[in-house]
Amino acid sequence: MSMKVHTRQVDGITILDLSGRITLGEGSVTIRDAVRDVLAKGSNKILLNLGDISYIDSSGIGELVSAFTTVKNSGGELKLLNLTKKVHDLLQITKLYTVFDVKDDEATAISSFTK
Amino acid sequence: MADSTTSRVSFTLDSSLDSVNKIELTAEQVAQRAGFDEDTIPHIAMAVREAAVNAVLHGNSYDTSKHITASFETTTDSLIIRIADQGPGLDPDKVPDPLAPENILRGSGRGIFLIKAFMDEVNFRQLHPGTELTLIKHRTPAQPGT
Image 1 (cartoon, chains in turn blue, brown):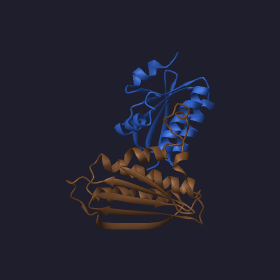
Image 2 (cartoon, rainbow over the protein chains, first blue to last red):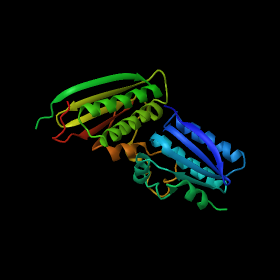
Image 3 (cartoon, helix red, strand yellow):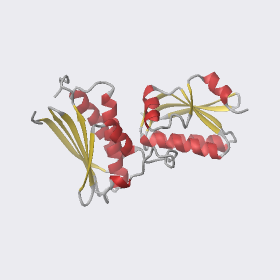
Image 4 (spheres, chains in turn blue, yellow):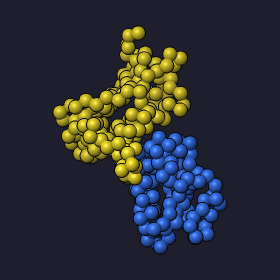
């Protein structure tokens, strides 16, 4: 199954609800394009909801890191929401869990962005 | 105990992402038949996927004239997977450590690290041309599959 992105706005934060697989040639390009679109529209506060991501490989992890640095370099913030156990474990193993700001509740995540 | 082979399957495939997906699916099925638990099977499948991606992307560079080979061998002691490409060769000692502070925010370079994290043994062999990765996961005595 390829990855799907649904975009919505809550209190000035762009939430990208992702579902499916983030792997080389499938979801990784989709994430890159989705984040670029958000930045191009002038928003740089992005919450990636990974609750329905069934699988992620090293390319997908790399794409999350690239999205994080792209948004940060534009002066914005990118946070992660609703990690599955698999994604959580991968971020722990790769020492990226503390790099990202990870939330497990949408309302808390929204209010944590710099106003 | 002698490490006798109980089953073996091998493929020669194009340098494509379809091949990566086929190898990953086979790894999952073989690991399941070998009796690995539900936490370990996805780890084996991911390690094999990463090795296949390396072979297709970094080894053969999607070159349609080059192929990758994959073999899956289940012995009484272990699951042994070999993935080979026909690329320029890979020196594992020259792969940067993705956990080093200067590399932690890199957008790539975590594949071999994950392979090593999920498998019990990982060996590299230069084929001139190409690289063969051997991934080994030990079976526990309680595992009933063959």
